[in-house]
Length: 374
Ligand SMILES: [Zn+2]
Image 1 (cartoon, protein in one colour):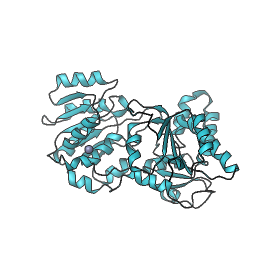
Image 2: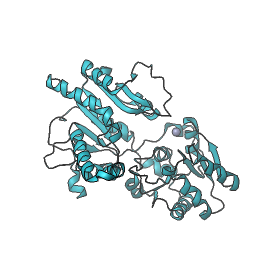
Image 3: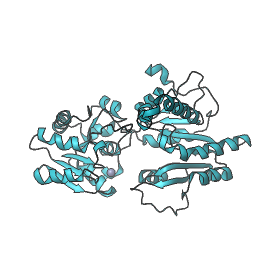
Image 4: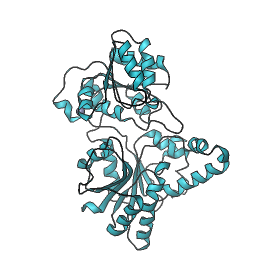
């Protein structure tokens, strides 16, 4: 397959997107902005940084078979993805079929977000945004859901209408496969690790408050930077059990995750934002760690089913109890790794998005969550 047969265009490129490119079918990877962690040279042949209209021109010129865009419920990406959708419509008029696909993990509350953005004209803005969402959603041909919570969120937006005019969709849990670094370092595991951004919504404040309810032998390593760094630095000075590592790179991540017994991410809701998956959770699972998190994350259902600890958000006592339980009776590396698929769920979802078959027009849903969630 030519690399131009398949194109991906994201509003923001992250290192994780780039790392995945080696394991998926060849494609052009284009993006509008780069995130703070994206330190890849975009001069590489298969990568391009460009605006949404330039990307739309590229679609018209190259006539790809598949275009992957940001997911329909990601409102902030609408201005990025609409030009590409228009380009696809133009191609369709000219008789060329391009499949538009997305990977969906959004689990925020769109209605709540609109109400907070436009508090004075809620009655008008909510129906307008819901209608726009539906218009955009119906332009997609296939959508792979990474979490059951995302599937719920799209249901709440009325995505699964009776006439089935939307895309085909499928749930492929966003589970990682075991990290290959474990083959070299399979030593004993111990301690608790928080590896992420030091901000309120990642719940690092809950973890610090939980320290006073934890026994004297529980050691917590915190890695990352962010606005709450001052709290972490102060805690590390006052409490011998807290170690602040500072900013960590990918090599540190693998090393620390391999050694940690428990990975904690007590995410908290902020406005419309809810933890979609939580990268540290996936990294923790891939390294056989027991997870402690909150009900806010998209993986909460799966984690509960598989013996990890899921608590209410903003609750230091519950967080401490969960950490204490996880430390005294961890699931164990092998038991955690056994629950993971051989191929990363994100890659399996990508395979499905590109698989030939009926993916155009209306009807014939792959799965019908209406029946399941009603
Ligand atoms: Zn690793």
